[in-house]
Length: 206
Image (cartoon, rainbow, N blue to C red; front, side, top):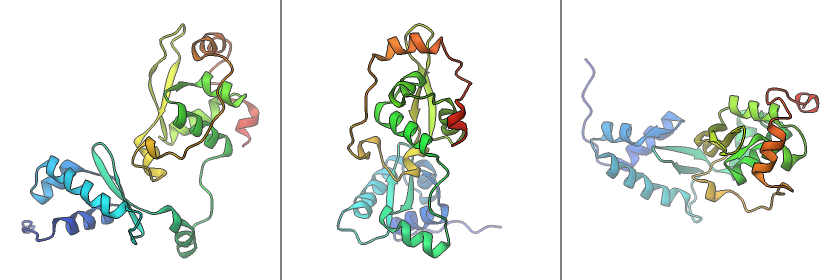
């Protein structure tokens, strides 16, 4: 029979150990359950830990990411080259240049329609949008209140985790181009003129 959990003297150390061993986001209510605490108290404790982990003066190689219902330990971006070298990880990721462009347009302007993305980029973005949906970096979050009711897209919590962000407010400041015409007019004109399932051959070859 499995031994019962014993009271622990250092709750923060226990949280750190759980998050480190998990390697993925852990729910506050789950942490609260195993630690014998209330969910609100557990989240408050984790938020205090995050202040120490994420402080500019911190010498730790880890960050503590805080999300709505979960939290996660991850490595700091500046140590990525050393991690890749030590673990033999090939540089680069699984996202093409076109997917990164689409992801940037969505992240900085969300929620947006695919037509909005096409207009900003000047090229059909169906293939990249579908790829990002498959990777769960973006999601459909409703429909635009305009003729044709085109789908709206936004980034996901997984997007935040992958890029080491606590929230969208931590996105780097940038100036992305805006479409030359308004969103609704573009949606009406283009959504009916193109098949959203058809990707341009140029993007499929990327």
